[in-house]
Image 1 (cartoon, rainbow, N blue to C red):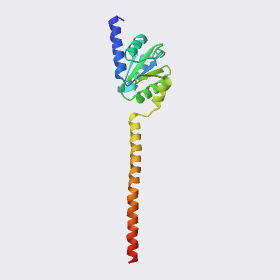
Image 2: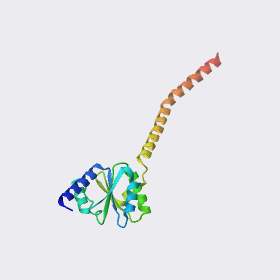
Image 3: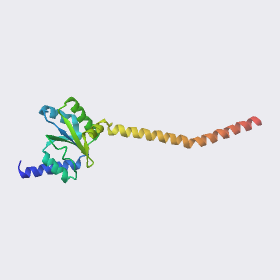
Image 4: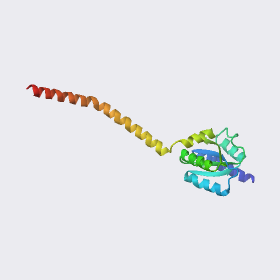
Length: 173
């Protein structure tokens, strides 16, 4: 690879690290081209999956302000750069790795922090962003309904007391 090609590859990787929400590092040793094509298809529009040289990835990560990737950059490495929902892509990688044990998840980079393989698996266990937002909205709606009930309780109690006094006054007449 010519020096200019290496510089362009480093710049492209640096840009990908900077613009993506997360990057998951995998080892793809033993997977066929057909398997890699199926993996790329399963990740969808939210991620790009690219094979990268470890030395160029190390340089690009350092330039992007990411430290600590050296342990994970051993052996053949491919990176899934995630631009959308991190949990959805992590699930896709986890499921593909279950079906194809040759794909090994090494770790990830998310918000500038290096994560190990177990952390990526925990991310995969999260529900999607839409489901989490819906649960949060439901919880907030329930709390607002409770608050409205608490605010209305003294007024409805006072209305019942006034109604009872009126009924008692009418029965006394």
